[in-house]
Image (cartoon, rainbow, N blue to C red):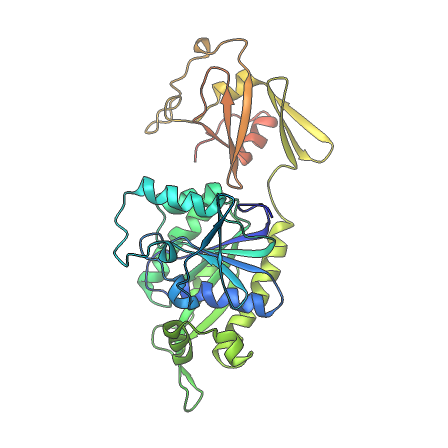
Length: 363
């Protein structure tokens, strides 16, 4: 059994610009819906400070270890890991960002998931260090942005879209949660907020609209009680909305994977970086040129964009020792002079291949 994320075919982040939009609820029920459709599914609760997946999934079982790795908890066939099941004290998780990122990195590399068709990562709200770490380390194959029809939620949700675009993660689309109140008695859905906000956001940002999830008492009750909404309602009522969402996500993910901008392969050959943008057509980059084009703050002024590094400061015999992939959008290059802090975007490497060096590599 492979540890970490290598055994996951699709790794999808579920994000929101702000808290309180029901992102975790959408993650939980999407996971159950995918499982109901026959896929093997896992969930990482990425909200270190406010984990909610143990309650929503209905399990506070303590995870076990095997061979130095963590075995995920399983509920109704969905595997998951969360700080909520690691922290048995019941007290608030009070830690600085570096420690939170370290804990999250352990979830990414230290869990024995087994073979998974889909691994969903329930991100904390916002676009800070934790979100960027996930985007860089998890090799995300897609992202879903959850919003509500409220104007403030829609405006902040754009930040999430921008973040995933910046790090070259395919945006599968926007989900509008709490789109209207679903009455159990009459079956009617009544808008509480403005209508069509999520669809408008998707249109303005040129991403797919994945659908609307109603504000339904059954969804609330299932989350409070840790009950599998999908298996209890078998595709009717609110469960149908999540089953439809699962279908849309599967189709969107397959389309996104067929349209990736990632290179076919990257190797270090004789101290130089060799990239195959197309299979069988390797491109070799001169190491001196790559080192001179480093975008890090030591080589380029972050405020002015003016290059600090001078050509005469680079050794003529400089070589590349290794490379390290950063998310789906670029790589860090380790040079023989010890420098390794620049992140080279794939899009800019392609420009460099064609002779264009006008733009920075920086993220």
